[in-house]
Length: 179
Image (tube, rainbow, N blue to C red; front, side, top):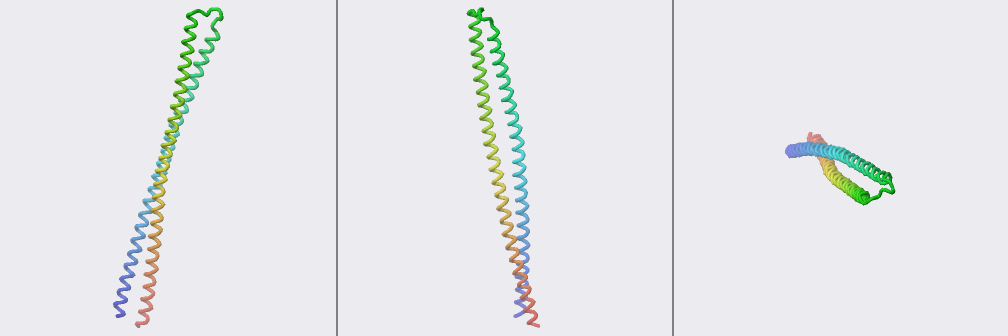
């Protein structure tokens, strides 16, 4: 009877050792996946940040060019109006002045529209960047869940090892009694 109980304890102990090893292996695999997810999320964040910075730089450059061109054109038209002789205002000069005013107004409206479009593009880029950050956050949360699951598996493996050690000690005590 003592031998069969000892054999049963050995089988139980071997089963617990095997279970602990399997849980450790699964925990290591999950940790690897969690690290890969973290790395992928970080890479996506970095790439998105670089793309967004390049786009914003191009948008800012375009805005500066348009503002400078508009200011230069406005200054040219204003100086032409000031340089016109006061007494030589004929019907042709009035028509030309009206055309110049309409041109200036159209250029300002166009520049304002471009500035609005640039602002809308910038807002859209900000929104897209926030979506990318949320996606990366989800990946990080999944990685954290994997790590927590791995820790739980390691704790269970530790319990199995403790139980196996207790079985070994009990077997040693039983064997000492048997002898």
